[in-house]
Length: 246
Figure (spheres, rainbow, N blue to C red):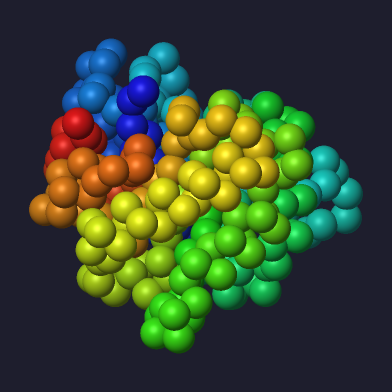
């Protein structure tokens, strides 16, 4: 099973920089890559990036979707529309959405359900804050988020889970490989208990992943990819992460 390296550009990029980055990655992939690759640019850049990566091994992903197919939801985008413009993945439940927009586990689950209905693979994010970690609540937080955010009919083929400790996102801090292995194993167990076989489930790690630490993280037991933030905006660094996949 190939690892999945997904680049979350967040609220970054211009048409010019997006075109250059997407074109550079297509040239690097040259029809094959050590990992599956997805690019998740801001919504206004989806069509441009989609056109640049069309025909390559790189997949298109969005950073969020609404739970409804259509309706009076100004500023939101439906999973159906994302699917129709060529997206294969959509990130849901990122900690920045949970924090900035007050999204609950139930909200994340509804979005993941909508994504699956539209034929997309949701990348469902979970992770504890620094305060929760210090209080020894990592396991309980992860269990609550996984159980509350996953659709009832989730399988290892139709979803991806991303473990992103909130305290490691954009801070330069990274969990130890032992910590990462422990949490990934726990996520896999929770999934198995509620949804069946998890051997093929992709569980990504996210949180200050970069070229210099990617090899150690991606070789960690239970890690089958990475959700990459800042480093995904740098062609050389992002490609080093792809190349670091075992």
